[in-house]
Length: 312
Image (cartoon, rainbow, N blue to C red; front, side, top):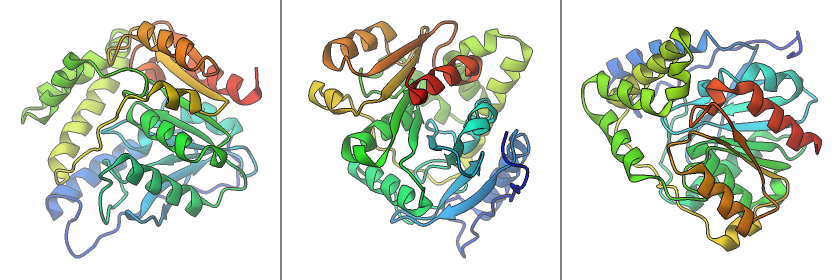
């Protein structure tokens, strides 16, 4: 577990003269109240700090033994560092984890300007890793959109990371299904039931696990709906599908974790393409999970990550 001397320091939201990046002061205060409630559920002692980057100060939530292997965690779109709640206790037991509120997304990072291209995202992440001043190259783990960002970074700066783990990465190996995209767009409709419907669709294994899973999915849906109405609209760099050449360039070790009921794309097609284009990339198909694999099967995800890092 994290060292006993580690102190939890709640993050402080920069409060500039304008409500940027929120729609108003009232919207900021409403969002922060929800963020604090979820933050109180974070299961391990943590320190937070704001790391300067060319795109603005980026909040990082750090936990785990000080001298352990460093690990940087990038969340899925519409989430934040707190999206790693189901996984952080196991990871922080043996690694020095750094969970990020991405500069382009909801959370406590404050963009001075927003990334507009994949190269911008790589620059932001490189600034962040430089600012963290880690003692050795980290294991870089990304979930969904964060998995695509992590893979983009691994192509640009392979020597700056120890290993890459992409969990249900957006695009990257296969285009995102049209039905998933259309359902996601419904979250922008004004009534919260549309966001709940989408979350129950992509987190259906979690919802089916029982009342606790359903509550967790609905809580995230309500938080996402509130965030969409609290923050000013912002563009998101669309994730792309890598060429065969780029897939082959992914460094070894690289691990891609998929749930067998994934709705973003057909997982069997992803595995087939990786076997053909990049057989050095390790893959794991987790049963009983889809895009919610980190929520509904956290133990299986943890075992795969540990196995990659330990060389098993």
